[in-house]
Image (cartoon, rainbow, N blue to C red):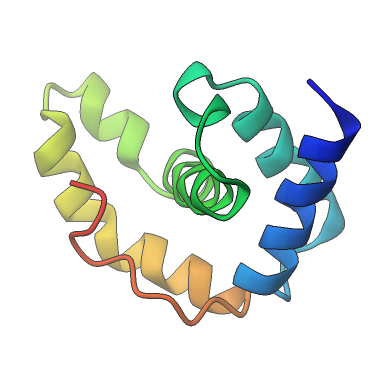
Length: 101
């Protein structure tokens, strides 16, 4: 996991979510670097996917819904507004609605 890749991801996050706190930015970069699926994606694509996943898992009831037996699609539906609100709080102007399904 190269420093160059981490720097590119961090820069993409600064553009995508300019108000994202540094500790959260570091966590999102770590998530992207730790993902095999995101490893081959361009930095902006990987940064976006990791950011949405970070918001979904860290700031919503998504995991609790999965534990209750909801499927991923249904759980994503129920937390979509909370994810969008979190992204907006981080200064993100890109909509999340339905795109990661």
